[in-house]
Length: 219
Image (tube, rainbow, N blue to C red; front, side):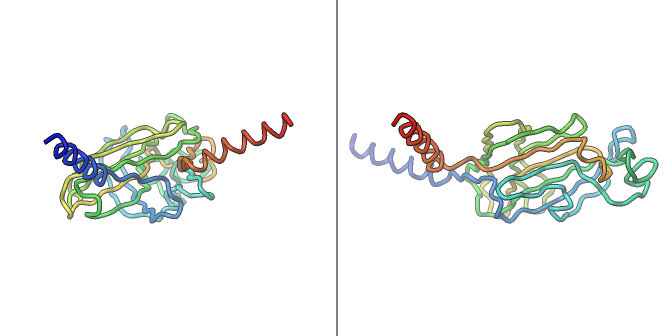
Protein backbone atom coordinates (compact mmCIF):
# COMPACT_ATOMS: atom_id res chain seq x y z
CA UNK A 1 0.00 0.00 0.00
CA UNK A 2 2.80 2.40 0.87
CA UNK A 3 4.49 1.74 -2.47
CA UNK A 4 1.24 2.35 -4.36
CA UNK A 5 0.64 5.55 -2.41
CA UNK A 6 4.11 6.78 -3.31
CA UNK A 7 3.41 6.14 -6.99
CA UNK A 8 0.13 8.02 -6.82
CA UNK A 9 1.76 10.97 -5.08
CA UNK A 10 4.53 11.05 -7.69
CA UNK A 11 1.98 10.98 -10.52
CA UNK A 12 0.03 13.76 -8.86
CA UNK A 13 3.17 15.86 -8.61
CA UNK A 14 3.89 15.29 -12.32
CA UNK A 15 0.37 16.37 -13.24
CA UNK A 16 0.69 19.53 -11.14
CA UNK A 17 4.04 20.38 -12.71
CA UNK A 18 2.59 19.90 -16.19
CA UNK A 19 -0.04 22.58 -15.42
CA UNK A 20 2.54 25.26 -14.54
CA UNK A 21 3.67 27.56 -17.35
CA UNK A 22 6.39 30.22 -17.06
CA UNK A 23 6.74 33.05 -19.61
CA UNK A 24 9.26 35.87 -19.76
CA UNK A 25 10.07 39.20 -21.39
CA UNK A 26 10.97 37.73 -24.76
CA UNK A 27 11.96 40.44 -27.29
CA UNK A 28 11.12 38.09 -30.16
CA UNK A 29 7.63 37.33 -28.89
CA UNK A 30 4.38 38.27 -30.65
CA UNK A 31 3.76 41.46 -28.66
CA UNK A 32 0.50 43.34 -29.20
CA UNK A 33 -0.76 46.80 -28.29
CA UNK A 34 -4.11 48.10 -27.05
CA UNK A 35 -4.94 51.63 -25.95
CA UNK A 36 -7.78 52.65 -23.63
CA UNK A 37 -8.51 56.37 -23.49
CA UNK A 38 -10.30 58.19 -20.65
CA UNK A 39 -11.26 61.77 -19.86
CA UNK A 40 -9.20 63.51 -17.19
CA UNK A 41 -10.50 63.01 -13.64
CA UNK A 42 -11.29 66.73 -13.60
CA UNK A 43 -13.62 66.09 -16.57
CA UNK A 44 -15.32 63.11 -14.97
CA UNK A 45 -12.78 60.40 -15.87
CA UNK A 46 -15.20 58.60 -18.18
CA UNK A 47 -14.16 55.97 -20.70
CA UNK A 48 -13.81 57.46 -24.21
CA UNK A 49 -12.69 54.57 -26.43
CA UNK A 50 -10.34 51.63 -26.77
CA UNK A 51 -8.68 50.11 -29.82
CA UNK A 52 -5.66 48.07 -30.96
CA UNK A 53 -2.54 50.19 -31.46
CA UNK A 54 0.82 49.47 -32.99
CA UNK A 55 3.36 48.68 -30.29
CA UNK A 56 5.67 51.53 -31.38
CA UNK A 57 2.73 53.95 -31.04
CA UNK A 58 2.44 52.82 -27.41
CA UNK A 59 5.98 54.07 -26.71
CA UNK A 60 6.92 50.47 -25.86
CA UNK A 61 9.97 49.33 -27.81
CA UNK A 62 12.75 46.77 -27.51
CA UNK A 63 16.41 47.68 -27.94
CA UNK A 64 18.11 44.32 -28.06
CA UNK A 65 16.78 42.44 -25.04
CA UNK A 66 15.68 45.56 -23.11
CA UNK A 67 12.11 46.86 -23.25
CA UNK A 68 11.65 50.60 -22.72
CA UNK A 69 8.27 51.93 -21.58
CA UNK A 70 7.62 55.68 -21.84
CA UNK A 71 4.58 57.96 -21.40
CA UNK A 72 2.36 58.04 -24.44
CA UNK A 73 2.43 60.86 -26.94
CA UNK A 74 -0.08 61.72 -29.66
CA UNK A 75 1.24 63.68 -32.63
CA UNK A 76 -2.07 65.47 -33.06
CA UNK A 77 -2.41 69.10 -31.90
CA UNK A 78 -6.21 68.84 -31.57
CA UNK A 79 -7.73 70.19 -28.32
CA UNK A 80 -9.25 66.71 -27.99
CA UNK A 81 -5.80 65.54 -26.89
CA UNK A 82 -4.10 68.65 -25.48
CA UNK A 83 -4.94 71.88 -23.70
CA UNK A 84 -5.02 74.46 -25.22
CA UNK A 85 -3.65 72.47 -28.19
CA UNK A 86 -0.68 70.25 -28.99
CA UNK A 87 2.81 71.71 -28.76
CA UNK A 88 5.83 71.95 -26.41
CA UNK A 89 4.67 72.52 -22.86
CA UNK A 90 1.03 71.68 -23.57
CA UNK A 91 -1.09 69.78 -21.03
CA UNK A 92 -2.48 66.36 -21.86
CA UNK A 93 -6.26 66.42 -22.15
CA UNK A 94 -6.79 62.63 -22.01
CA UNK A 95 -5.63 59.76 -19.79
CA UNK A 96 -4.06 57.02 -21.90
CA UNK A 97 -3.82 53.42 -20.69
CA UNK A 98 -1.30 51.68 -22.95
CA UNK A 99 -1.26 47.88 -22.77
CA UNK A 100 1.74 46.04 -24.24
CA UNK A 101 1.17 42.31 -24.04
CA UNK A 102 1.13 38.81 -25.48
CA UNK A 103 -2.06 36.78 -25.75
CA UNK A 104 -3.08 33.14 -26.18
CA UNK A 105 -6.56 31.67 -26.49
CA UNK A 106 -7.18 28.30 -24.89
CA UNK A 107 -3.56 27.17 -24.72
CA UNK A 108 -3.12 27.91 -21.00
CA UNK A 109 -6.69 27.22 -19.85
CA UNK A 110 -6.86 25.77 -16.36
CA UNK A 111 -3.14 26.22 -15.71
CA UNK A 112 -1.00 28.33 -13.41
CA UNK A 113 0.69 30.97 -15.55
CA UNK A 114 3.73 32.77 -14.15
CA UNK A 115 5.19 35.86 -15.82
CA UNK A 116 8.68 36.84 -14.74
CA UNK A 117 11.42 39.27 -15.65
CA UNK A 118 13.83 41.89 -14.36
CA UNK A 119 13.02 45.60 -14.02
CA UNK A 120 16.30 47.40 -14.61
CA UNK A 121 14.98 50.85 -13.70
CA UNK A 122 11.85 52.95 -13.33
CA UNK A 123 12.19 56.73 -13.39
CA UNK A 124 8.58 57.50 -14.33
CA UNK A 125 7.22 60.48 -12.42
CA UNK A 126 4.05 60.31 -10.34
CA UNK A 127 2.06 61.44 -13.39
CA UNK A 128 2.33 57.95 -14.88
CA UNK A 129 1.95 54.51 -13.34
CA UNK A 130 3.51 51.38 -14.87
CA UNK A 131 2.18 47.95 -13.92
CA UNK A 132 2.84 44.31 -14.77
CA UNK A 133 -0.16 42.08 -15.34
CA UNK A 134 -1.71 38.76 -16.19
CA UNK A 135 -5.34 38.93 -17.35
CA UNK A 136 -7.79 36.12 -18.11
CA UNK A 137 -10.60 37.45 -20.34
CA UNK A 138 -13.98 35.95 -21.18
CA UNK A 139 -14.45 34.84 -24.79
CA UNK A 140 -16.11 38.17 -25.69
CA UNK A 141 -13.70 40.25 -23.53
CA UNK A 142 -16.66 41.45 -21.44
CA UNK A 143 -15.01 40.54 -18.14
CA UNK A 144 -11.69 39.39 -16.80
CA UNK A 145 -9.85 37.93 -13.82
CA UNK A 146 -6.69 39.97 -13.26
CA UNK A 147 -3.55 40.26 -11.21
CA UNK A 148 -1.34 43.38 -11.26
CA UNK A 149 1.87 44.50 -9.60
CA UNK A 150 3.74 47.80 -9.91
CA UNK A 151 6.90 48.05 -12.01
CA UNK A 152 9.58 48.14 -9.32
CA UNK A 153 13.35 47.70 -9.90
CA UNK A 154 14.50 44.11 -9.40
CA UNK A 155 13.29 40.68 -10.41
CA UNK A 156 9.53 40.16 -10.56
CA UNK A 157 7.31 37.09 -10.67
CA UNK A 158 3.53 37.25 -10.97
CA UNK A 159 1.16 34.27 -11.23
CA UNK A 160 -2.50 33.61 -12.04
CA UNK A 161 -4.55 30.42 -11.96
CA UNK A 162 -6.44 30.63 -15.25
CA UNK A 163 -10.01 29.46 -15.73
CA UNK A 164 -10.36 26.09 -17.45
CA UNK A 165 -12.25 27.30 -20.53
CA UNK A 166 -10.60 27.02 -23.98
CA UNK A 167 -12.58 30.01 -25.28
CA UNK A 168 -10.93 32.45 -22.84
CA UNK A 169 -8.05 34.78 -23.74
CA UNK A 170 -5.04 35.00 -21.44
CA UNK A 171 -2.77 38.05 -21.65
CA UNK A 172 0.47 38.96 -19.88
CA UNK A 173 2.49 42.15 -20.22
CA UNK A 174 2.81 45.76 -19.12
CA UNK A 175 0.58 48.79 -18.73
CA UNK A 176 1.49 52.50 -18.59
CA UNK A 177 -1.29 54.88 -17.58
CA UNK A 178 -1.27 58.67 -17.38
CA UNK A 179 -1.96 61.84 -19.39
CA UNK A 180 -0.73 62.08 -22.96
CA UNK A 181 2.49 64.09 -23.34
CA UNK A 182 3.67 66.13 -26.32
CA UNK A 183 6.57 64.39 -28.03
CA UNK A 184 9.18 67.04 -27.15
CA UNK A 185 8.29 66.74 -23.45
CA UNK A 186 8.35 62.96 -23.00
CA UNK A 187 11.88 62.69 -21.57
CA UNK A 188 11.11 64.76 -18.47
CA UNK A 189 8.45 62.25 -17.41
CA UNK A 190 10.94 59.35 -17.17
CA UNK A 191 10.78 55.76 -18.40
CA UNK A 192 11.07 52.14 -17.28
CA UNK A 193 13.44 49.48 -18.63
CA UNK A 194 12.73 45.76 -18.33
CA UNK A 195 14.44 42.60 -19.53
CA UNK A 196 14.48 38.84 -19.04
CA UNK A 197 15.89 37.16 -15.97
CA UNK A 198 19.23 35.60 -17.01
CA UNK A 199 19.04 31.83 -17.40
CA UNK A 200 20.66 29.86 -14.55
CA UNK A 201 23.27 28.49 -16.97
CA UNK A 202 24.24 32.03 -17.98
CA UNK A 203 24.55 33.07 -14.35
CA UNK A 204 26.69 30.00 -13.67
CA UNK A 205 29.00 30.98 -16.53
CA UNK A 206 29.31 34.49 -15.10
CA UNK A 207 30.24 33.04 -11.72
CA UNK A 208 32.69 30.61 -13.31
CA UNK A 209 34.29 33.45 -15.24
CA UNK A 210 34.79 35.34 -11.99
CA UNK A 211 36.42 32.32 -10.35
CA UNK A 212 38.76 31.78 -13.30
CA UNK A 213 39.67 35.48 -13.38
CA UNK A 214 40.40 35.37 -9.66
CA UNK A 215 42.65 32.35 -10.05
CA UNK A 216 44.53 34.07 -12.86
CA UNK A 217 45.09 37.15 -10.73
CA UNK A 218 46.37 35.04 -7.86
CA UNK A 219 48.67 33.15 -10.24
